[in-house]
Structure formats: C-alpha cells, structure tokens
Image (cartoon, rainbow, N blue to C red; front, side):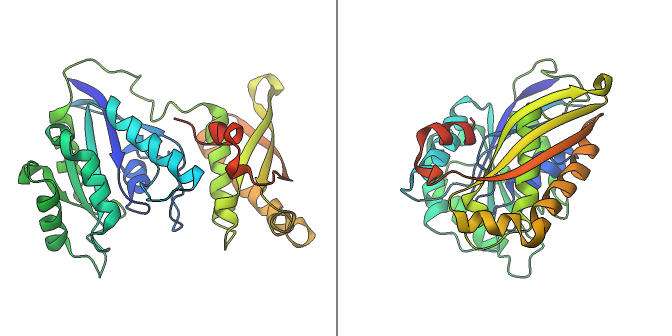
Length: 295
C-alpha cells in the first residue's frame, strides 16, 4: 500500500479541476470555462487497490502583481513544498508560453517527484508532440517515461498517470476512510457550489468580483435539514443588480440550482437563504482574502 499527497499545478484552464473530479468520481472542485475559477487549495481523495492519493488542486498559476493573484500564486507555491509527488498539467491546445516557463522554473528542483501530464489531447488544436518537446527542454532531468498524454475531459489516459503517481508515494496505510472523496468542511463545499452556480450564469467581470460568505448554519428536523444563510458578495452596486436579476430571477436560479446540487452531495436536505451584498473593493482587503483564499 502507498499513500500520500499529490499537488496538482498548472496554468489557469489547464484542466486541473476536471482531472481531480474525473479521478475522484465526484464534483470536488469547480469546473468552468472561465480561467482562474479555483481560488483555494481543494482536496480530493482517491482510494484504489494500490493505496490512497490525497490530491491538492491549486489555483491556476497566473503571472500578475494584483494582490489576489499574487496570493493565489503563493498558495500554489506553498502546496508544492508539502507534497510527496507533483502532477504538472499542461494544456496541449495552447502555446507553451511565459507562464509555463515560470511553472517549470518552480519545478526545476523537484523533478525527482514530478509527473507531467499533457492534457486536452482530444482538442482539434492540440499539439502534444510539440508540448512534449517543450517540457523536455524546460525540465531536462524529468524522465520521458514520466511524461504522459491524456484527456481529463474524456477520461482517457488517466490510469497510467495514476500508476506513475502511486509509484512515487511512500509506503503506508490509508490516511482517510475508503468512502471519503474529499475532506473539505461543509461550509466550504456549500460556498463553492453556490459560487459555481453563480459563475455559470454571470458574465463580464462579475465572476471574478464575487465571493460567498456563509453567515450561519443550523441543523434542523432531527438532522434531516441544514439551514444555511449565505451572501453572494460583489464589489459594486451595479454588480449587485445584475446578480439579483430582473424580478430576482437570477438569484432565485442560483439558489434553486445550488440546492439541487447540494442534495446530490449531502445525506440531508440543504435549505438556502441566499442574498446579495456589496463589499466594496474586497479584493484589496487582507481580511477578506484570508477568508476567501484558503490554503
């Protein structure tokens, strides 16, 4: 038996969250066409015959000096230090650019515990051969047999990647019960489901300008129902109006669909009281960022 922690790193939209959800078999991390959806370290757990992998899905590594983006960079960098193995996912449909080189620089001294996954090979614009050459040039000490081609979306090529990751982990017993697929707290999971539903319905700058604040949770009806009071927080009054929508149609849709998703996850009914609040310029406030960007 082998058990340990695997950190997933890559550019925004490299397919990290899709990979995590595919191997864990459940929705652990938000998946969206919008880049930089993952803000915190999200943990997913895979238990197999070989043992157990605790995956940490990190925010997309994005070069920016904005406070929120720099904090997300630090989350990814810090998680690399504690991992037994690292999975570096690359989007084969995009050019190997400045951000990939920055990630490779971070991984230069960690190639002994590194696996590279060339993802999205199902895309019509994918160039896996060229991407492989780029990886070999940037990480010359990474053995070729630890560079894999896969499609997390189509769930192809995952088994060889998992086998290679297990081979890098230390011998040991399971760290979590077999039926666990995440160890995220209940409030974090609820907040992420709400945020995911909001992101899928909103546009322009709003998805990046919102966060979810869970104000109160109370178990009722002898443990059969969890009442949750939550706020979708935005930065401006104009954004608040768009999140509420005409006749409150938008916020109602977010609430109803979030409740449907939460009923698939928890063994009890989750009843949401969801409202919208303005927290002006929250992305510049350390107090809020510390809460929103959890390590």
